[in-house]
Image (cartoon, rainbow, N blue to C red; front, side, top):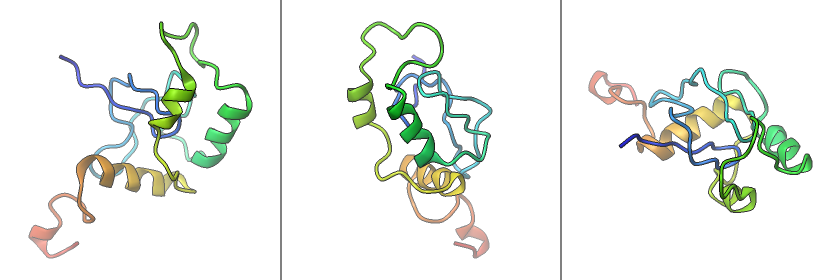
Length: 110
């Protein structure tokens, strides 16, 4: 079974890779639903607002069967951090837990 991840911007539940890793570093991917590029330093709040303002349409071709952007958005990260760097850090803490970076307590950091 393949692990699926959710987009923190729009809540799309079928990402094949985590948008951010345990260090808060972005993946090389973008969300097919809202087109947020995890590698770009885009303003997460502005990107979500743009997606909503444009009708929450599926960005990459035909939407999957059962696509429900309203229900999907309810599963997105709330509240959304104001910067891309904070988004990576918030996602890391939500997905991997804790407040310090993995392995840093062993060397006296975090």
